[in-house]
Length: 415
Image (cartoon, rainbow, N blue to C red; front, side, top):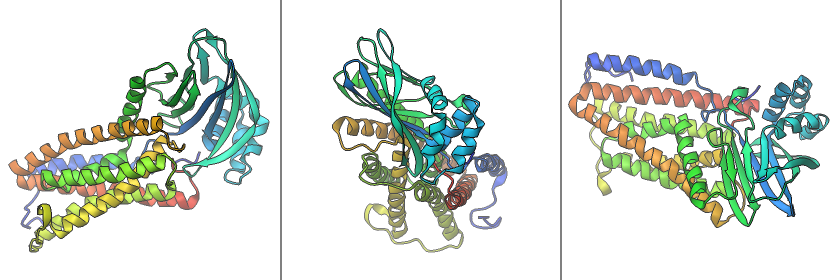
């Protein structure tokens, strides 16, 4: 299924030495592993969209969006209907996708209703499909939408459970179900994933914020491309001030586009955003290699200005800021919310962003002091380790850039 310097031995920097050689070998093995990763470095995840409201007493109407191509292959496999996959792929990206779904509606409902449940405190709610299939595009990927009315026994609150597109199906990892609800006098948003598959309208505001915080933290930890970009920033920073300014620039930029994109104010095509994210990794890492090249050539230092930064430093911050804007679109694409502005939604987005920042700060606090200590205690090996890291990150970024560009040219979804 389609988802998918050298430094001279006798230079001023000196040779790598025994420690540097070992570090280079370890890093070389790491880069081989990284290069084996797919182009969409977010882990081949997907988002299920759920909008739940109550049009009548005892009835909950659920409007659900599922990634079309994934739905087709998952149902075909789970319900033993291989023809659904054949028919679904034949009309993929033609605007006629719903014609492939309609004959297999019973099998699709069997798949969905066995993995998505709604109940009250007194019992299970029973679903019944309302209307026909509709299609839309989310983050550049075709989505199939169905509406079901759940008849629920009287009880206190409503509990949701989602196991849609589970990891053990082997197609995606960490599928997220985003719920927008207006039930039981409560209005807000919630997120379910394999680690937290349930949600209750009776949960506290603090519990909801905790879930979005964890979702943000997990996204950065599992988003290999964002971690490599952050590593590139750290390696390319000579002083603590450099990494703080670079990280602040990145944070400000991605926070702006993240919130605007998640609120639907701006939008980014993943076939543009994802290659640019990969390119940003290579560009920022290459910056450090350029600095080393200037040192080797005995180039005179550039004059410094405000904050003790030279023109190259300011240019680097500008580049980081611009790429931060692009990463914000990537963060928003992972969360997948594009509803109009509301204070509950905005507060959830900010908590999600705080989760990202806490992990980002933790990585900086762990890696930068270690790298600084190595550079101070063993300057030559430290320089070689930094160069090896920067070179490896650049190669991975360029590799992903090429893969993602090719995926876009072939029409392969990047999500």
